[in-house]
Length: 74
Image 1: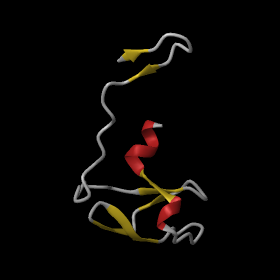
Image 2: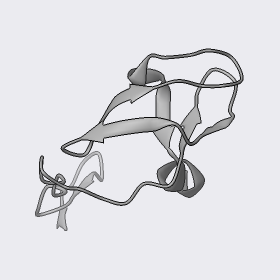
Image 3: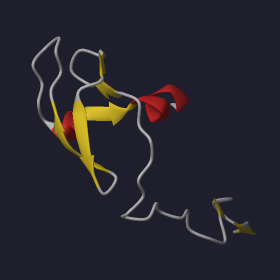
């Protein structure tokens, strides 16, 4: 890490690496961000959620879901 004097801000030398667009991980479930329920009925295309439906609240917006294992890390 580079250290800067003054505001004492440390900046990493490298930027975090992004996942490849064709990253096909095995995702077991998604978490609905509206009702916090697990969702097992979804489809992914090139590592991105393309279709999903929450059986509890009816949410079908892929942007409003988190991948299960990533949600647990937070």
